[in-house]
Image (cartoon, rainbow, N blue to C red; front, side, top):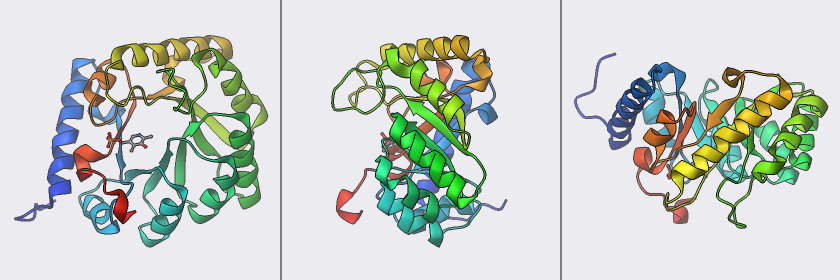
Length: 242
Ligand SMILES: *Cc1c(COP(=O)(O)O)cnc(C)c1O
């Protein structure tokens, strides 16, 4: 692909991130292709998403239902949208109706939201929806996600009682100041071990989404398969423009 003489800042930043992802993947004996970079575009304008789309990036993440419902229909259909973070169960239907190309919900943290997503997929008649179960590995009450000790039960519910969902793995956020990063990530790794044992699946059948702008290299080196990167690609968030 010809490189334009002047690239937008987001494109330059994406390229730098992809290079850092590649190095981190190689350090852990993996290929960059084995790590999915979700560009978290919340509060960012369509034009910036379009710029990254223009250089071939397809995977984007949003965190507010109203925002993704507004944006997705205005952008190409082959975007692989991820809803990241807590989803209110009453909004599951609106999300799936407006975003038929929703690829994954990274943040199922209770049975009710799982049930509502399952029902909405069935009503719409779309293909089954991939979901990650969100685990609260930092123990902060303000954070959503199941406690590590409740993780297997929620995974079993998704796997056994939600035929229109595809259980795809586990996701965590960790402490916002990144102080507990290795412990939080280790906690998610032990949840995965328990889940794989309880379900009789291999680790390669259970994705891990951990790592954001401040800690994605460490997350990859510890085995993360998905990283959710916002501000390092798009610059600081501007909530006044949401
Ligand atoms: C906003 C957001 C991100 C991206 O955060 P950055 O620190 O800007 O990379 C990742 N995950 C979730 C759930 C988010 O809401």
